[in-house]
Length: 144
Image (cartoon, rainbow, N blue to C red; front, side, top):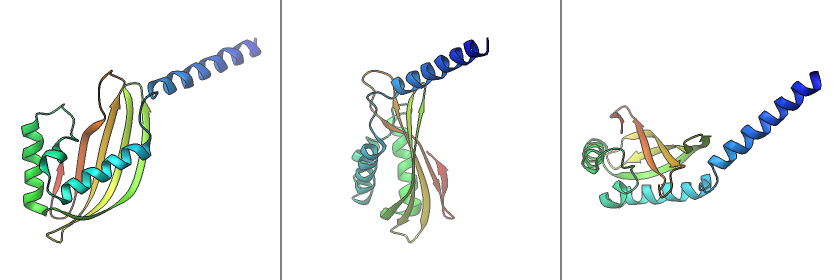
C-alpha cells in the first residue's frame, strides 16, 4: 500500500513538473528579455516616447500609459544612467513573469529603484510586455 501511494505521488509530481514546463515552452529566456529591458532604458535615455510606450501591455490604454510616463519625466527628468540589481523569472499557469529591479539616476539628480514586471502569456500571438512598473524614489512614488 505504501509503495502505491509513493508511486501515485511520484506520478503526480512528474505530471505537475511537465505541466509547468509546458506553460513556459516558447517563452523567451530571462537573458533575452533583459536585452529588451536594455533597449527600453536606452529609449528612455533618448526620450523616444513612442518606443518606450511600445513596451507596455495593452491592458491599459495607450493614453493612460502616456500620461503616466509624462508625469514621471516631468517630476524626475530623463534617465541618465541605470544598473540592473536583480532578475527573477517565475513560471505560472498563465505564462511567465520576468521581474527586473534597476537602480536609476535621472537628469534632475533624483534616484529611484524601478521594478519592471514583464509577462509572456500562454496566449497565442501575445508578445511579452510590461504589465507593472513600480518606481520608488524620495521624489516620486508611483505604480504604473
